[in-house]
Length: 177
Ligand code: NAD
Image (cartoon, rainbow, N blue to C red):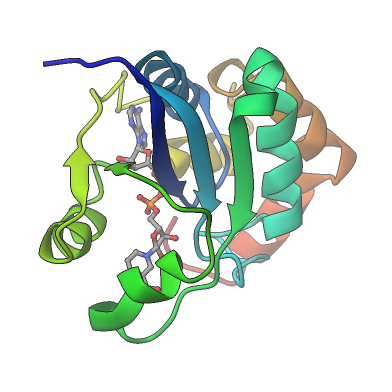
């Protein structure tokens, strides 16, 4: 049952490699349900590889540019991974503003927050077969139309940093997307 509580603050975590229109639709849905949103850029230490081509700073710029009117209701915070899943929720809580509920469809994220007693909502999946980081990175490497699958600001950041060339170059070393 959807709820609207403008006093609540939600946490929305992703790798956002890159931030795409599926992520954006989830963000819009969350914004209709709560007052503020803490957007966590996970795996912040990762970049320049096929699964994680973009730095935390580049991902911040992508998301910040896509926020529009939501900008003054969102925090965008990078968070490095740690090797111990069992204490990851405590690690995250120590690094971010207080939040009341987590939005995620990632099974590990849902499991860890559930075990910690944190309320979880699973947002709907939007056109998952195309709005998918893996599919979009593949289109980039293969010269397909990835721009129509991301917000304009994201395409512009990727253009500025020559992200497609970067991905093509690092993909020569890795076997899978
Ligand atoms: P992601 O960018 O793949 O996805 C972010 C969210 O968007 C997910 O909930 C996903 O289900 C959702 N999503 C993606 N496409 C969608 C679509 N088309 N429609 C609707 N929703 C869509 O990021 P992720 O892999 O879920 O990020 C989890 C992060 O948490 C990672 O960085 C991971 O490393 C981190 N993590 C770290 C630890 C640790 O450090 N021990 C433990 C758990 C998780």
